Length: 108
Image (cartoon, rainbow, N blue to C red; front, side, top):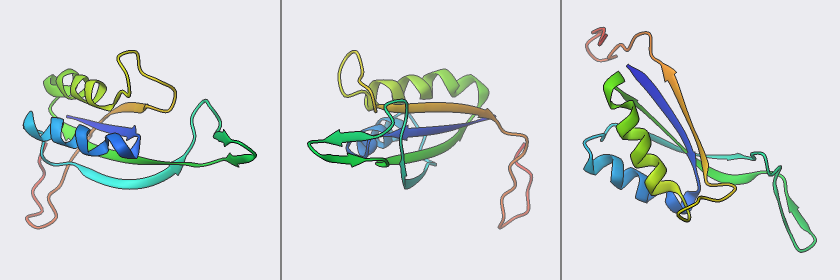
């Protein structure tokens, strides 16, 4: 199994979640974060924003579903066909084990 961590613009988060849900990936954790990427913040007039609001999504999928889920995320999170700075990032990590707290059952 793999964990997919996604950082997206707040205004794109619902679109990403809807796309994932329609494809059967319903179990997603979402939380608001602050951060910056390569652009090192944002300057608007005389005001410099060092940390920009983003949303982080986390989901765990079977190995064979990683490409499908990542493709959905790419298509729904881009602000244009080519994408733009600040559209986000996808991180894919191995999952060693998953234990359901209520049952104590090891899922892997």
